[in-house]
Structures are given as C-alpha cells and as structure tokens.
Length: 131
Image 1 (tube, rainbow, N blue to C red):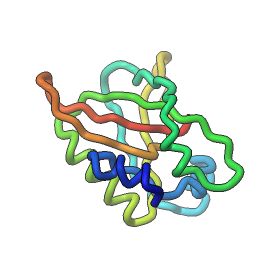
Image 2 (cartoon, helix red, strand yellow; image 1 turned 90 degrees about the vertical axis):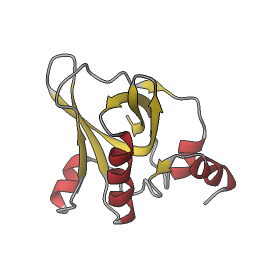
Image 3 (tube, one colour; image 1 turned 120 degrees about the vertical axis):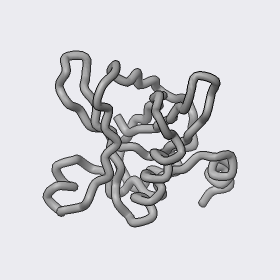
Image 4 (tube, rainbow, N blue to C red; image 1 turned 180 degrees about the vertical axis):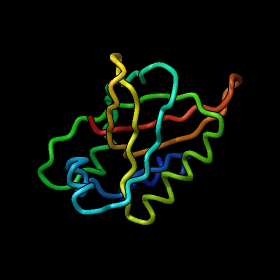
C-alpha cells in the first residue's frame, strides 16, 4: 500500500484494494460473484460530485481508464454500512451502490471507498465510486 493510501486508511477511510476486477456488472453476474449491494430504497437520487483527489488512482490497476466521483448519503447506521463494505472487500467481493436515477430507473455503480461520519443531524456515509 502506498504511503498516501496508508494515511487515508489511518484517518478512517476504508477502500477496496484492487480495481482490476471492476469491469462491468454483467461480468460479475456471469462469474457468479456474490456482490454486496448498498441499496437506496427511498429518497433523492445521490449527487455524484467529481473528485480532484488523486488517491483513488492508487486503487486503479492496469489500462482501465476510470473516472471517480464521491457522494454523501444520510443513513441510520453509517458504521454498520461501512463494515458491510469492509467485510465484502476482505472476502474479495465487489460492492455496488444500487439507486434510482431521476426518472426512477434503477442504476448501479461500483463503490471503491467508504467513510462513515456522525454529524449533528445523524450519520453520513461518504462513498467513492467508479463512474
């Protein structure tokens, strides 16, 4: 792990160690990989903001040209959601965010890093995704 990624890990970030497996959701299903889904059941479509941070590039392997975005979600128990991601990544399974778009059509994106935070209004989950 690079020194920069180690610093992020020490500050509460949890992230996937490899992106080389991230190609498409269809490939996951074809290979019978048990995907861990974080599903938004109700509420607005997540706002994916592009990130200028360079550390997600440290997770990218091979010639895959990937764009990264971050979104913030309010949740009941952010630490439990982050633990689900950690457990899946430790088992070598991908984690995906399943959400409704602005037209109500279900969409999925790969989650590559997560951080739970407690603020005055409740728990917030920060998700870094491949878009």
